[in-house]
Structure formats: C-alpha cells, structure tokens
Length: 83
Length: 381
Image (cartoon, rainbow over all chains, first blue to last red):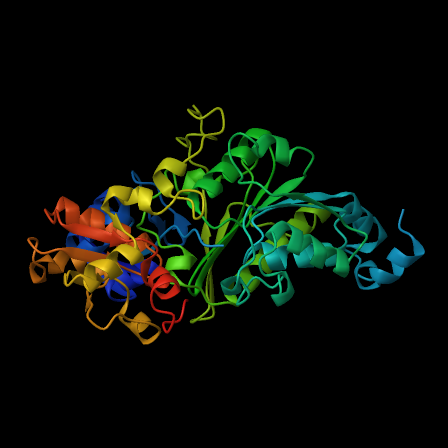
C-alpha cells in the first residue's frame, strides 16, 4: 500500500523545486518527517530549506510526527523575513 | 472624550456601528508599537495614525536612502539621509497631529526590548530579519501581548496574529531560525514595491480589530498571499505542545539574541560571515589589475542583474548553481568573487573555501562598491 500525495511549493521553494507542484509516493503510515526526507531525495536543491519549511496537510499545519492521510494535499512554505 | 474636531475627523468611523464613538475612544486610548519603519511599518503606521490610534511607537535604527522610496511610502525624497524614525514621525504628525509618536532610534535587542515595549497594547512586527522576528515573538509571549506578524519576499507575503495566551506563536510554526544565507533578504532578492503595502495594511487592519475587539482576528491562522496569482491561502495553525517558549515545558524563559547566526542587515558586517581576511577592497583589486595580475572574476549574481551593471571580464555562475559548477573553476588561480553588495559572494566564498579554493577572495561591498570607488560609469542599485 502506498500513499500518493500532491505537493505544492510556495515562494522560494517553487523556484528551487523548478515547479509549483509535484507528485510523490510514500509508504502508508509515512509521517511529515518521512515526506521531508523523500522531498530532499527527489529535489536536492530543496534540502537546505526543508528543515525550516512549514508543512500544511489539507490546509492544516502539520508537525513532523503527524501521519500523512491518504491522498493528502500537502503545501510547503518557506519562512520569509523581508519587511 | 472626543473633541468636536475629533468627531469631525473620525466621522466615517463614527458612522460604522462596529466602531462608533466608543470604538474611536478605544483607538484614542490605545498604544501600538511598530518594529521597523520600512516597507511594512510605513503603511501600518500611516493608517493607524490616520485611524486615530492615540500613541504609536516606532523602532528603527536605519537612515532613509534612495532604494527605500520604491516601497517605504512614509518616507520621501526630502527625508533621504534622515533617521527613519524622525522621517516617519514628521510624516505621521503632518497626517494627524493628535497622535503621540514616540521614537526609538536603536536596534531592537534583548537588552532594550522590554523597556521599549512597556506600556504598549500590542506589537506590529514589520522587521526585515529573522533575529528581530524571533525577539519580537519571544517578547510578546513573555509579556502577554499580541504579535501582529507580517513578512514579505518578492511577490509573497505572510500575515498572522500570534497570541500565545490563546493560540500558537511564531516559534510554534518555525521552531528555529533557518541557517544564515538560505533565505534571501529583500536587499538581496528584491521585492515588489506594492507588496509591503498590501501586507502592512493587513497588519494594520488586524491591529485595529484587536483594539476594537471586533471581527475574527487571524489568531491560529496564517494568511499566505501571492501577488502574481492574486491568491490568498489560509493554513490553520496549531499550538505546538513542544514549543520552546509557549509549550508545555518551555526552555526559553528570557529574551535571546540570534545576531550571531542570522546576520542582521546593518548590524553585522557581511564580511564577518566569511572572515575579513578573505576580503579584497575595490581599490586593492584595481591595483592588482593595474599591476598586470589577472585574477578570475566570478560574478555570483542572477543573470538579469547583468543588464543593470556588469564587469566585462567576469564569469557568471549564480550562487544557487555554484555548488554544482565548481569544476568550471581553477582552484590554483587567484579568484575574486562578487555580487551586488557582498552578501551572496560571502556565502559563495564559504562554499569555495570549503571546497579547497584557497586563493579565493570576496570583493568587499560588491559591484556597487566598485561602481562607487572605481568605475563611476556603473550605476549603483
């Protein structure tokens, strides 16, 4: 059983990933932490920003230990600091 | 009590039942601290002064320069070179002399933050760097004040209200600052001039709602705005039970500064990031070239920046591609790295030095310093 996820990238993550959207397959029961690791493998340019990126699952903030529900829509936002 | 003059000035507020005479009185009694008098602080301060907030505090230690005027609408051509807080106060008092404006011309640090924030009902975070954002957050958590947060980059903006007494704080979302250099500042990466107008105005709106006690504040919600898509997305937030400052077992019980690893523009010289020993000044480089040396000039800016100014002999490898393109460079040759102002090239130098480029040096102040000191034909941007 695998979990097929749609991942949306925002702001600088979009530039680093080379696109706005990606699909990723993870094992059932995979957590947000697993997702960060998998995204780092699929998009090496994202790796340095992944630990500090905000992950939203179905438009709700997700912690690293949270399990990803099946077919979830995941969005990643980088911290931005400009003012 | 409102005077006859105030009743006339705030007529359009008094007509809204949600504000009315009582609401306007609340605004007059309120005190709001605005950290940063730049892109976000400009519209926030202007609208809050216009709205009749009784007391505004402004914190900034910078001076108005030409590059600010594209977005920092509280300042003007006539105040270039003046202290930002002085320039802002002048404009605010012109707009509404009934507002008391208190200015703090000093960097916002763990040493002075409590003193400065005392007496204010809430804080608007209009700062331009991570250390100040963490400090503002921690201060608000520790002193029980709402933090009206806004942040921008290029076409993207974020807004939220962090109130740890009834919702998550900034650290719940972003537990630690990102490593230095990974998230570009607006000075490095640029920003659409109107963007801080949108975001700063939303912050002012949230501040006003909190003072008036009306509507649904953005507590527990993060608004993500993109100007190109004209999209407003919301993410529902949760308090992090493991949050280091507002969680079940807080580790942080007093204010801390993050200067050492975040790099505050203007406070820490960019050269310190890479070590000043590895710097070369424009004058030194000009002398080297005059004496017949021909170091490899490495430009780590983005391609579109070459249209603004360029050094003819330079090789372009944007910072983001450098790690993958080291093979194109000769580590035995003298190498001078540059960017616009010296920040990106300092990161590039760290990368090069750790990859064994022992003869690599950083052009201090970047191509802008070269334009200023050596080649007046080049524009400064």
